[in-house]
Length: 93
Image (cartoon, rainbow, N blue to C red; front, side):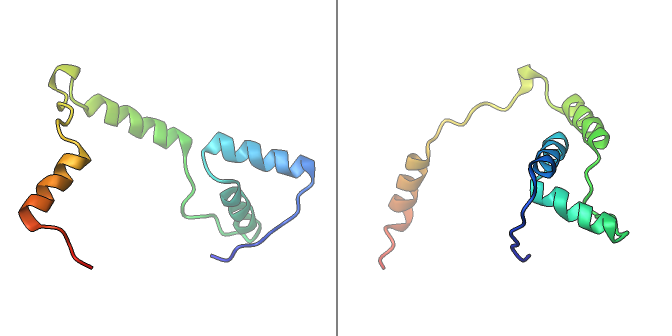
């Protein structure tokens, strides 16, 4: 992608900000979609909020009950690193 700087008046800026927030996308994405819509080419990555809500509902229905949730890990990053150092030694540069 190529970075472009554009100037918007306050009314357009607020409109772009609201659309981006409502759809959960960046302001740049809203502007790109507007350009493509003007050219008659809808973006293939258009997000359908209703579809996301349906997908989220399915995912939530399939998660494990709280009694069968995976137990929290009992190790830390430091412990794993120390185990690696004991096994492989320190890397020399």
